[in-house]
Length: 139
Image (cartoon, rainbow, N blue to C red; front, side, top):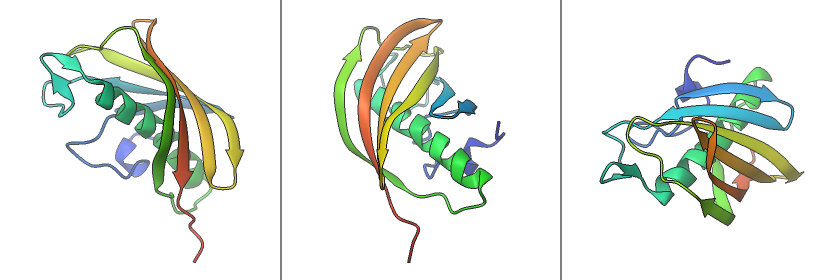
């Protein structure tokens, strides 16, 4: 996979919430993120719900960035349209590594519906559906 996540997502420090895009297979991708002390979404040693949602959105953005970059096309900016069925069973803690699987459920024009599952040490800790709007690259 691409060695520099910053080539795939528009976010920059201190908001980067993905360390690596692990793989992309059709409608499914996986990303990795290790929680560090300087993370702005940390609260008393745990990652907040907002941090998990931002991580999921950036995981989806990394997938889109990889696809567009592999086609030598400009990478579009995406916006969260909605988050549905967000469920968290365990808050990730400082030093935990989150592996997130993104699956595209539906794509219509510039709107993508994804389903996300986040795991730590193979335990699912969070999941949701997210609707993402992509800016058009057309003039």
